[in-house]
Length: 219
Image (cartoon, rainbow, N blue to C red; front, side, top):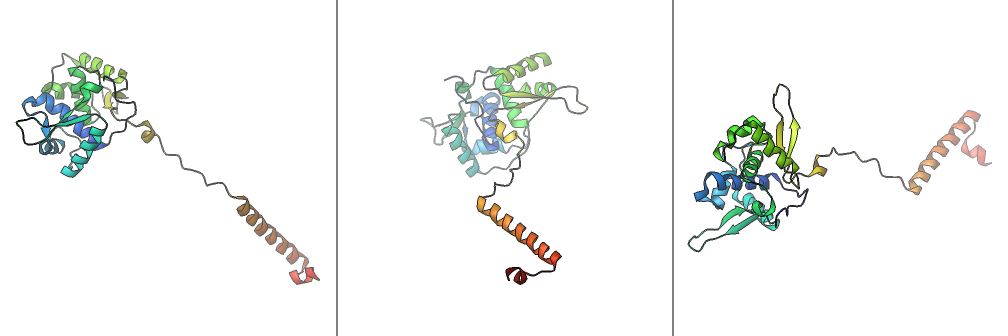
């Protein structure tokens, strides 16, 4: 079913890395796709074309794969002539994107925020873009997708191009600044206790001013 990813579906860092790797390998090494678990772990922890470089364990990857399967974003299959299970993404069933859109999404998932110029040079392993204008058109389509898949961050200091980030699995609630909660309301009993303490202190000051003691007042 097209467009089946709910807006705001939360995906953690390792899940996003796995999806990026599966998209990448599907386009750059199609003869070895889908990927075995070992190949996927190596792809996730690859030292080139990754930011940040990670060191996920096979157990962590297995747990993330199960989560992605539960969300319908990854399928694990085994061909009749193969001994090991292999994994492929199911984003074609969930997102209405062309090859350009998938290439840019993979780059943003694997390398973080980038400018159109950076994306154009790095996309050559996937697909050829005619010029920066074509990149920008594709980025705007990602941003206008439902749910949105990319966001323009604007230009940083000294930059001549806007930077773009992916928003797949972006959770807006996590991005909002945390508001410090005020103290819980006091109970009536606590308020009465504080009032008694305050009145007792006031009475003691009055006695002291008049030169009396509590015993004198009770006579």
